[in-house]
Length: 124
Ligand SMILES: [Zn+2]
Figure 1 (cartoon, rainbow, N blue to C red):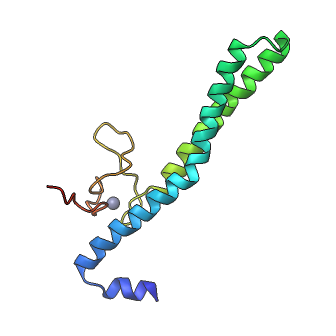
Figure 2 (cartoon, helix red, strand yellow):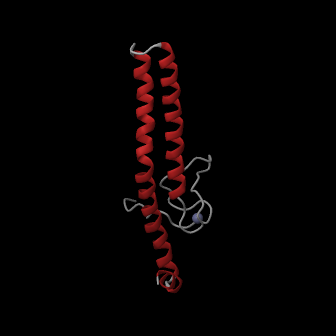
Figure 3 (tube, rainbow, N blue to C red):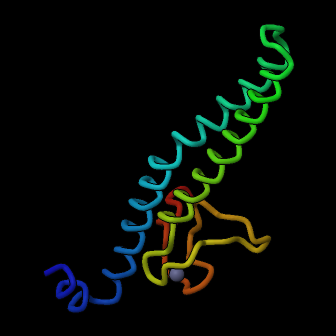
């Protein structure tokens, strides 16, 4: 049903759809990835707290440092995974990377296929 509508739709309507779809995906990516961003921050705070308190024996400290460090790493990887899994161009499914190769989370156009991903600013 949806497929038929898309193929019959005129070109202008399709470019509007990529905007709506990309914004929807971006929200989904943020929603899925933000808990892992939070747990990355929590593990980092844990390391700082562990460094400043004197509650554990040295063996336990090493274990806790290791666990928190692994927590930072895994959380950050999962955060990146969900961001890159969902925040893709709806037209060509490529990641919108900027000229320096880093992820652009709110690009105006897809750098690869040129599909519109955001409404042009109405302020100018
Ligand atoms: Zn594209």
